[in-house]
Image (cartoon, rainbow, N blue to C red; front, side, top):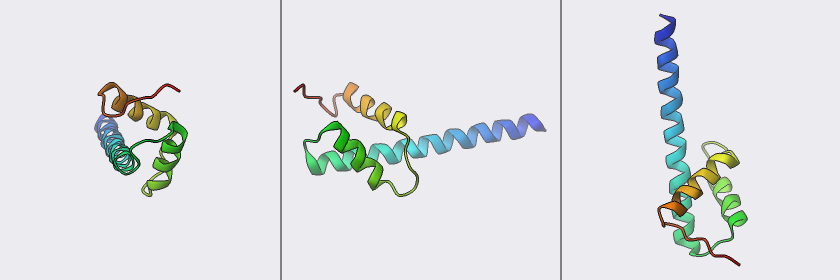
Length: 79
């Protein structure tokens, strides 16, 4: 019985994680479509401010930004 609860909790945690990932992704895409160009710190700040459902941690946000860079959806510019 305890194993069932643990499995359900793990499933819930995974679903919440996926939901949050989708929220972060959609906000990144929306902001970048609007701004076209954006400094990294400005983008992080804007994404955090635009998400009302939860406060994303910096690690998750950087992870999602890296994902977009790897997929060539967002391009880094060296200054």
